[in-house]
Length: 367
Image (cartoon, rainbow, N blue to C red; front, side, top):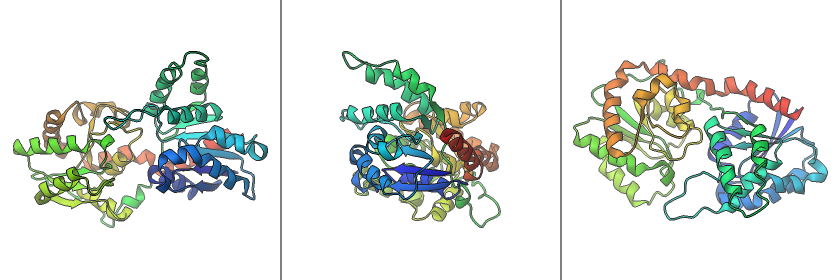
C-alpha cells in the first residue's frame, strides 16, 4: 500500500513521527513536506497550495493520504479533486488552534481554528495523539461554531466525533540508550533535576525557576540539567537563570544530537514539567525511558500518561510554592521507586510496538 504523508510544518514532533513511521512501516510511505522556516501561520494558510502542486506531480497514486493538523486539508482536497478526489484522507492532530494557550496579551486568530475545523470536516478520519487532546478539541468546537449568528452547523460536531480516534506518536526510545549496561545510580544526597521542555511561554520556565529558589531556600540539595530547545537565546530570563544556577548545573543548552540528549537524560533523576500546553508528552516519556521519576502538574495529558496509583505522589497542584514542596517530597521518595519502573511506563510507545498498529490501522482506513 502507498501512503502519502503531508507535513506542511516539518519539524519537531511532526517530523519525528512522520520520518519515524516512514522508515519503519511495512507500507510504502511518501513524505511531502515543507520546512518550518516559513512559520506555522503561513504554512497553515499556504501549505495546501504548495503541497497540492507537489502531489499532482507524483508518479504514483496513493491508497491513503495522511495530513497533519497544520494542513488546510479542505483546500488541498479541492485542489487535487480531479487526481485524488476518491483517495481516503486522514488528519493527524499533534495540536490544535482552538485550545492552544496564547501568550499574555495576544488575541486568538480564529481563522486558524476554522482551518482545523474544516480539516476535521473534510477528513475521512481524525487521529489524535491522545484522548485528552481528542476531548479538548471536540469540547471546544461548539464554542467556535456558537460564535456565529446563524447556520452554526452544530450537528457537525457529532459527525466529527464519530470519526475521531486516538493514535499516540511512536518514539525512537532505543536511540536514547547508551553503551552502559545499567541506568545511572541515584545520588540520594544531591539528585539531579531535569528540564527538557522548550524554553517558551507555554512551558512556563519562570514557574520552574521560582520553585528552584524556594527549594534552595528550604535547604534542598540538587543539581540541574536544562536540555530543552531555547526559542530565543537572548531572552534575559534565560541568560540570568543560566548564570544564577551555574554552580548547580551539569548541563545547560539544547543537546546537539539524540545520543547526547539520551546521555543527559540518563544522568538525571527527576524530570519536572510546569507546562500549560501538552497534548501528548514525548519529552516526558523520553525521560521516563531513561529512568527519571516524573513531577508533573495535575492537568493536560499527564494524568493519562501515568498510572492512577502514581498520581498522589507524582502529580502536583498549583504555583511555585506548591511545586517547591512537591519537589522536596519527590526528592525524598525517588529512592523508593526503581528506575526501571519508570522505564516500563514509556515502553508501550516505542516504534517497535506501535509501527504494526499504525500499519493495520492505515490499511483499514484505506479500505
